[in-house]
Image 1 (tube, rainbow, N blue to C red):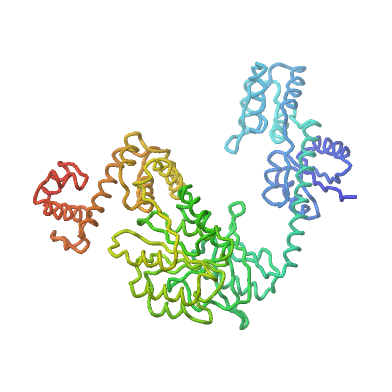
Image 2 (cartoon, rainbow, N blue to C red):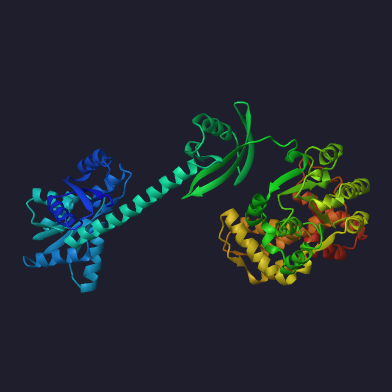
Length: 594
């Protein structure tokens, strides 16, 4: 037989105490203790008694509000129903038609609703913290009102002034409803507490050591010693700007623990779930350009952090599936910002065999120290098994390094034990020998990541999705673009692809002062993008400003770019304006300013 639900009743007046006593006897599964006490007195009784295994408290009005401030169990308010007020009005009419209703909003709001529905013309006065109830009653007495319908607080005050009153009290149905609500909430709370205890006990039996901290790094749950959890808390509290998932190494009593930390948010409160494992930290870490990620980590990053994963074309996904079973090496080719890394992550997650870890290697940072680690026979990634190695920016390799990599892959039969992925950036690449060597010597499949200029039909949808992303990131509420603004925006080529597009939309969202991005905003932004692009295309990155100013402004840089392009066009202003994407008037203004 299940234990009874224990309810503490605090009735502000004796009549409600009697009603609660009668109703509580109708619930066999309830055990009640009921006291008569109002406001601060009721609050004090509740504060002293609620810890005596009570599951819920029933009270009403201001007393219930005060009790909620000092207890940690549910407090149920006995409401005043429309039937309670209607019954009081009918009772008053047996005596006089000249009466008023006075009380706090919990009573008067329902009274107003009732009078509106039934067409009653009754004076209703709502009290609040700023209202002088005594003065209100005096005014009503001067106006010759014969009776006041009111709540318990006003009733006591009216009696001191010899004013006739009828107390608006909760009827049996309201009290019964409060008990039913308390019973339901208490049962649910007991079930939640029971499930929490079962979960905690189950977690304590797990072989995997764990600790859960709150945002102050106080222990919420753990199955390790107090000393270890305290040491871990002290260590993690020194870490700043922790992301959703982090990995650390911590020494405790001459043992090195690998700590996998995941941030959890529950009802706006932050917790840190930590798995602890005795381990040896890797010899090389991320600062050398090599990143180790286990498959679950990649899945998490792919779904939550890689912004452009949702923009991988369906045809690209199908092609990845087609080549998956026939190639052990894949090269992903495309311009800057075409989501090549996202495609590489998708390729890794498609694999069924070599998916233990994704080891990412930044080819831009390749040096003798990195080569030494890569070929280390003890723990080097090129001699490990069942992993996928991702060489990013492989076009940055020297021809010598590319040849060395191909030789190592062949001589060690690496592709029998692991898979290889490459990302190849086609921007400003003058030497195609590396691409061709990798493609043919390692029998690579090739996947093309198309630029935005080849995905014009998708640009409107992509823009909308990025706009939503930037709204969330920047806490803004931009609904969209003005029609002409969108037309201008979509007509731009976006040579920087997703990276440039995202930065542009973020800038528009941040600077927008209305719910729609204006045509003027877009024109200004695209003018700047064209200036920057022409600056890059003209190889002016190393030019020296002729303008003699201590701190050059954007205007100064823009003017210098215009002057260089004008010189290339032999002084032809029309051609220069067209090339830069600006008007002749804007060009003239830059040339005019000294």
